[in-house]
Image (cartoon, rainbow, N blue to C red; front, side):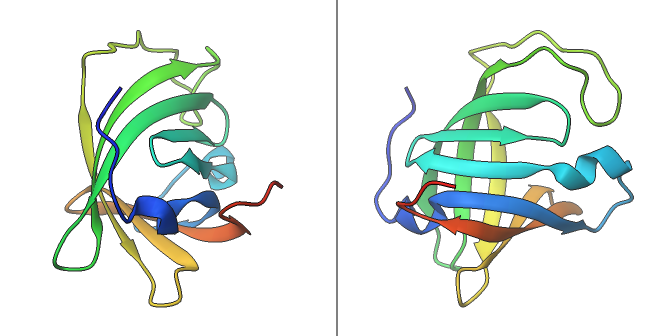
Length: 128
C-alpha cells in the first residue's frame, strides 16, 4: 500500500473523459476515473478496466503529484487495440493533476506535453 495523503479528498468521485490535447481513438473517449478512496482508483481507458493504487501530494502550485501503481486489469485490449501488458506491482508511475477553481474539471497530465481533461460526474461520497 502506498502512503495515504492529507487533503486529497477533493479528488474523490467519478470523472469522465472530456478531451485530450492529442488525437485519440474514439473508444478512448469513453474513459473514466473513479477515485473511490484516497488510495484507490477504479477506471477505464474506454475499453480496458483496471484498478490503481495511488498516493497524492498537494503542491504549492495548487495541483497534485500522484504516485501510482497498477494493481489489476480485466485483461481486455486497451482502447488503442494493444494487448494486455503484464502488471509489475513494483513499478511506480508519476502523474500531475490540476483541478479547475470550482473542482469540476481535472487536467490529468501523463507527461509535460500530454494530458486529458475529465469532468466530475459523481461527487465524492455518492454512488453513481
